[in-house]
Image (cartoon, rainbow, N blue to C red):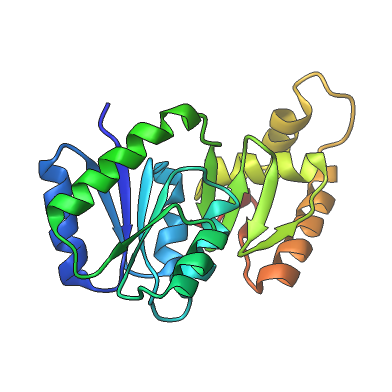
Length: 224
């Protein structure tokens, strides 16, 4: 199976060049031009990430910390910075290596291959689902917005996981109750309304965004 490489850089000409070259080398590539796009692509399960340090809004060091909280694949910084302190900062942020611009495609290919070989020991990457800056680590049952971890009860997490996994689909409270509590559960599906309210309050307080939409007379759906 071909390795998946995520390229994160706001220089479109560079990302197109790297993407074409790596595809010729047999890799599957994904491209992001900023931090938000990069986070949204974590659910492509990249085997390696090429990450530019100097980007608008959120720089690569800050983005690396967010990615590293959820993904264990190698992260290689692409940068024109070459000072020792810059390298220290990058390694402390969770990066694995530096490739200094300008670089040859031969050098980049060799480093990518070397890190992928070394990373064979960590093929157990947790399953990640992301939406509008929200990152859900399904394996560890943890939810993050940026570097901040959000706290949810087990039932709340189960509801979030179910709705996110079927984004844009509408489910009535009876279907949600049966899925989360089980078909033979003794109780009232009206508890779903209260759980949804609590989830919304926590998400809105942390992110300022609405993730769950009420479709009147039909049920709830996760905004895609």
